[in-house]
Amino acid sequence: MGYRGGIMAKGDIVNDVVSVGNGGTLIYQPASGVEVIIFSLGMVNSANATVKFTDGTNHTVICEGKQSANNSGITKIGLTNTNYLRLQNDTGTTHPLGFSGIQSK
Image 1 (cartoon, rainbow, N blue to C red):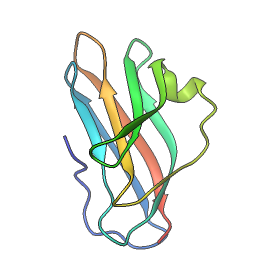
Image 2: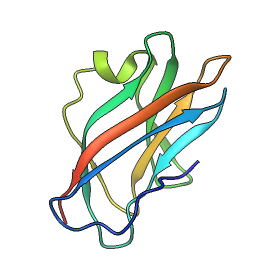
Image 3: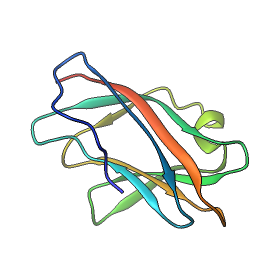
Image 4: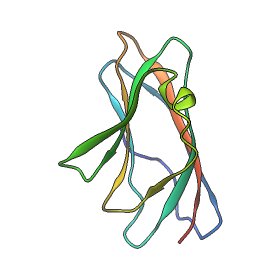
């Protein structure tokens, strides 16, 4: 499931919260030429989630597990159209996943 936001400008808040089914993903990929800094990632307490940085082919795990984003000490994740955010629901049921940040370019 991709980001549902509209046209943004530098300094605008970028965020979304989506109910994601088991094994499903929330992907946020900024438009070409846009850069975004993510400050917060969210999930419910009972949800297992994997937070990944991806180029669409290669994935690196930033953190995983229950409340992974909140417990990892992550303060900022820089995103571009080439390297973007992927939140994966690893639970057996549907849970909300979300993020919040700001467009920096």
